[in-house]
Length: 182
Image (cartoon, rainbow, N blue to C red):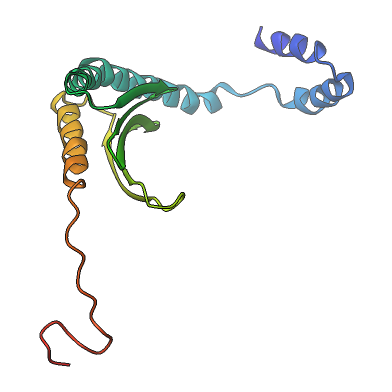
């Protein structure tokens, strides 16, 4: 029985006074009416569906796209790193004075998020600038495979476009306009 397991766990704790206090406070409230648990069970069933949709999307769409991109980057000697942590996948591409990172994660129980970060390193430490974009997609339904391709292409396009800096705009003294008329 789950309650007995909890009791044994608490009894095995080092702080016996705390365990005794905790059990004394909680025991009268341990009985939960089944109708109160119905919503919890339904939420867990939905969460399992979202998790399944996310896992399928990763396996069938994101991983193959990232693998293809990693092969392209390696073939062209572009420094990159792919890592996973928890429910997220991160792809980081390093260039001379800029790096970009794409993070794919199940950020909410019913959504997958693609976070795009482009970081430009400043001349001084801590002088970096960041441009971030975030796209969320609903996991209530299965996501199309083409979505992963589009997100990786968006990320790589932004990274390439950000390599070209426009000419600085001329400084205009206060009260003057570019047309010469005040």
